[in-house]
Image 1 (cartoon, rainbow over the protein chains, first blue to last red):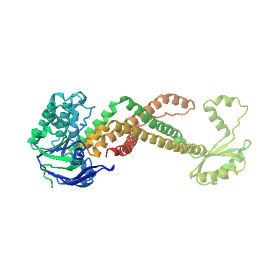
Image 2 (image 1 turned 90 degrees about the horizontal axis):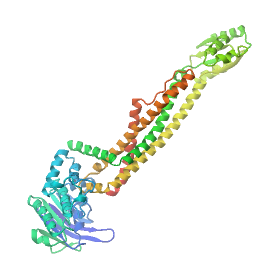
Image 3 (image 1 turned 180 degrees about the vertical axis):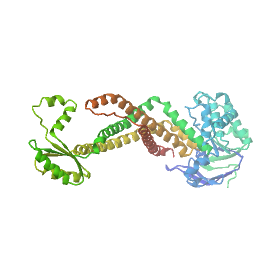
Image 4 (image 1 turned 90 degrees about the vertical axis):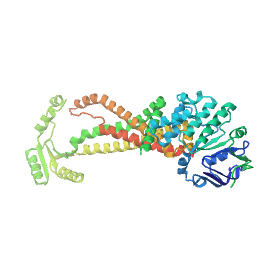
Length: 223
Length: 299
């Protein structure tokens, strides 16, 4: 359960990225955050993942208020999330398998069990045959799938993706969205930020629409 | 607990991978660290050997009393009786003939002695006081020199004391040198870790975003610092050891020419272990400082 209440985010340069944003996301929901570029989608994603803190208001994830979270508690909060970034943040000096192993090394999983789980995650995104390849050798769609594999290998309860289909052709984007849909169907909360409206009809998720930092006309349950 | 062990194993693997990833840098760092540790420890080995050289002599505190050359049996008897009255001393008389014989037995002296027209040596007493404190010895030497027909009184411990003072200065300079090099070693590790953090900023950033704690991120760098320090320490031990090995034979030969029995020694196993431990400690320290400063920007 994620609850945002009257969230504001102002940057020191005087830019207000989010104003008075409130919503609730139930466990297992699939939610799209949409809006034009600059509407505050990325800021909202960063606030949800505790990469930044709100200027005012509260964000509660699994009962913890991110606005007042101790610095030392942030890593443990992040382990609830599978994060997929706009720029993917893959490690280009490591093989596909090693990229997926990183989250498991962080939690200290035994190497054998970790390798088994990493291969299972690669299997889910259709990259099992490329585990020895390096990310540079992958296509854009494959790189995005690798980013998803790394995000889900920890079996997170919440998948949080920022523009996961940007820079992909529509067939590849549809493949990627099918993968998210599959995780949604097995009970994972999926939150996608996207500026691309064509997928919403296709998947029929709940939509939170941001306009100039405000939640506007969304069919979300504004509190 | 098992997770903890796996995390540490991962950190060690990372540290080793980073050491192996740039062999040239690793070798250069090891040369710098090894040299920085080798120089003071070589100095220490030299001082330790010198101390061994004086060990035999330093315990004996003697006062030699030399009579004037024309002193007769009566004068000698006078000194003998005075010495008998002096409490708490052992003494023996070395006649001028006996002294000459001893000198002839010494290395290289026989020819010189043979060329002399007459015995130039005086009668002498060697006094070993029970109380060997410096003040007592000096007071005694002073009173002896006032006795009749005494030409010269020599405190034989003086050279040992001078030598020990020299050793003390040596030790002190060595300590200063060692602290300088310790600082250099910390700086080298500091910089190596700084470069590594720069090179791995992508990895550190991603790891933090997906739930790595600061401890997890710091650990491989600390292990790296310690490991590099340990290898540097072993390298230093190798340098000092081979130096001692190469010098041992010519040095023993040189000293035997002076009629001394002396075998120089290098580093003991304890010394090697201590050198490694110093390397580990300083490397760890450099890594801690570097990580504390350079990982801040990822917060």
